[in-house]
Image (cartoon, rainbow, N blue to C red; front, top):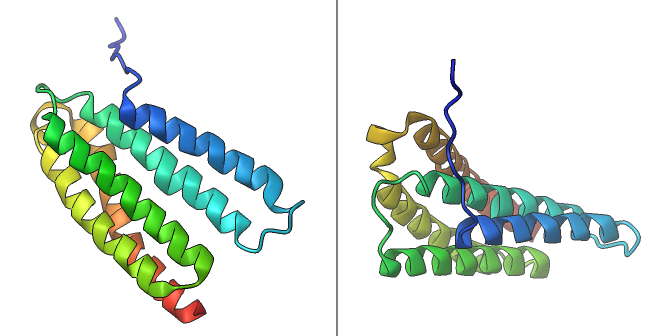
Amino acid sequence: MTASRHRVDVDPYTAAGAAFVVVGGLVAAVARPLDLAKGSWLAAYLVLVCGVALVVIGVAQQQLTRAIPQRERTWQLAGWGVANTLVIAGSLSSVPLITDAGSVVLFATLALTAWIGRPLLHTHRGAASAYIAVLIILAVSAPIGSFLAHARA
């Protein structure tokens, strides 16, 4: 039996995701020694939401049979950056409305991401499953995060 091999390239999604994982690891390494009150949360957010999720999205989108138009790619990556910047800034500054704004931008970005990846459902079931799982987890966790931000304020 011959194993099927899929090629995974380093693209803006996987490169940025990997960079976020590294930054999150560095934050985790210094959070305790520097007594960063929200360091553990920030490290986990950078690794899981900013990093791993973006890598999964990037790898899955590489399985698309057509290239993502530059305009959609730009909106998707910009939305991802703005959403996560707002969520992090709102959480670290304890201003829940900023976190809420980040959640709204994240929902719009997730909708675009779902639209971009819809052809995966017909061509790559495994990639589609991981892609959909990440989008659902993020969509469910965003309002929970906003609720928690308001509860802590």
